[in-house]
Image (cartoon, rainbow, N blue to C red):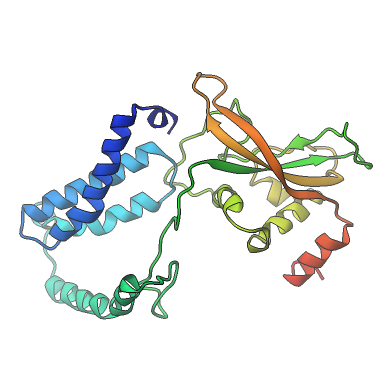
Length: 278
C-alpha cells in the first residue's frame, strides 16, 4: 500500500480510469458471446487481483472473483458439464432477476438506500463496502494508565492491535484474505458517531478488567501485572512516511473518549443500556 501510495500521479490517474473501465464498461459484456465474455471476466478478475496485492481488504476481493468465474465456459476451463446444470442455472438466473427488481428501482431512485437487503434470505441487497472514501486516514488509539489520580504528567500506554496502524515504526502486515474483525471495526470508528459504536465502550470495559479473551485479540498487553485504572481513546491522523523508517507519521487531532474507569457511572449506564452488565 505504501509503495502504491507514492507512485507518480499520472500512474494513479491512469488507475482511476482503469477502475472506471472495469466497473462501468466491462460488466456490459458479461452476458456477451464466448470470447468477448471471457475477456470481460479476465479484466475484472485481474482488477480484483491487483486490489488484493494493494491492501488488506480481507476476503472482499476474493469473494468478488467468484461470480466472475461464470464468464468462462466450463468446458474451456476443464470442468465437465453436469446433468441438469443448464436447467438449474436458468432457474437461479430467473429467481435473481425477479428479486433484483426492487434493488434496481432503488438504484434509480433519488434517495438510494445502502447496506440494505430486499428479501428475507438476503440473496440480493445494496451492499457497499464504503459509502464514502475519506482523503485522510484517522485512527483511534486506546491508551491506559494505572495512575489513581490523573495529572498532566500521567503516563499513558497504548494498546497495540495485531494489524491496524498503531506504533509509527511498525510495518503493516499482509493478512488478506483473513479477516481481523476487531481491527476492521476499529478502522470505521472515526467515520461514525460515538453513539453508533457502543461496542467500543464494551471493549474498554473488558480491558479495564483485564479480560484474557479480549486481550487475546490484541498484539500485546501493556499492563501484564494488573488491569489499568483508566482507559481513554485518542484520535490521530496517520500518513505514510516518505522515508523507509518510521513507516507512519501521525498527528494527534483530539480526544475521542475521555478517561474511563470501571467504577465510572456513565460507563456502567451505557453498558446496562445494551445489557452487557446487570
